[in-house]
Image (tube, rainbow, N blue to C red; front, side, top):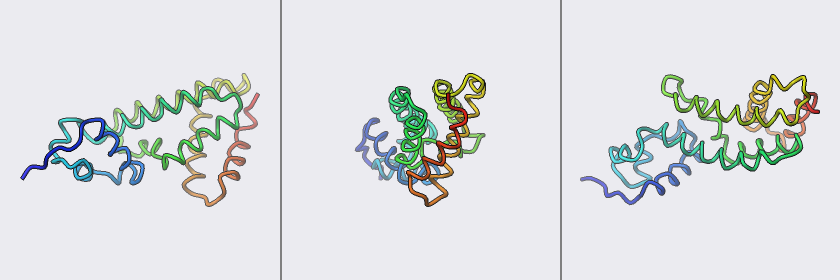
Length: 173
């Protein structure tokens, strides 16, 4: 017997966003989404082409909203702290999209590049002129450092932030 659809696209988006926050990308499948939204699995495809599409939409919306705030940071340690807590508060889902298998990840790779380019474009405001041409590498290093410390080490946030900041202080104006 078919399930009745109790969600509109906006509600599907919000429910799936919560699923990704709790379980990460790999911990959510279409059947879980369908159950959460009280719909048949096939009905999901009336709203989204696949799981990647809704994931990218959620990441993109979240990142764009956050980045508007991040761009206003005037001091490197506040900029780093913003990224740190964005990733931590979102259980890292803002960057877990990089772990999606590449052959399935065209949209994800484009979004990943946009996020890194956004940060690289802003981080040049904090670095010496000699380092402006490596803004993308600095940006990637910052993301990887934050992810590593949030996910791998049991230090206090304050200690993690101080350590990460000190990694980048030599680039600072």
